[in-house]
Image (cartoon, rainbow, N blue to C red; front, side, top):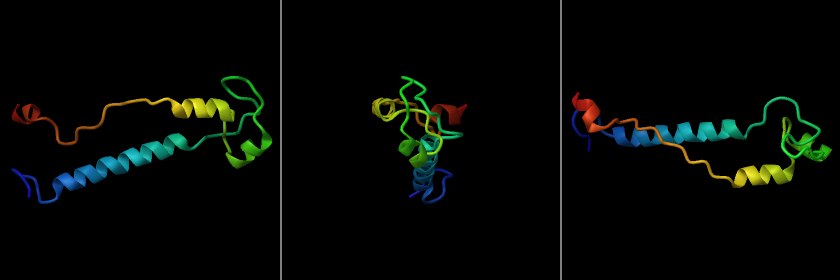
Length: 89
């Protein structure tokens, strides 16, 4: 059921597009870029060679990475539909 000028399935398409965008953003964040460091960027502990080979581009030791992964960063979502007020102006 569409409302107004929206076509049928428009809301589902918007939800799917939001999910796709968020997944792409998360995947891009998880991929290390560049050369692996020999020592952690935060605590300066040596990063084992096995970790550097397993995860090319790694910058953090396991402990620092686990600490960073445990932190939750909330961010505002994207309002693809806009508010009714913005549509009335």
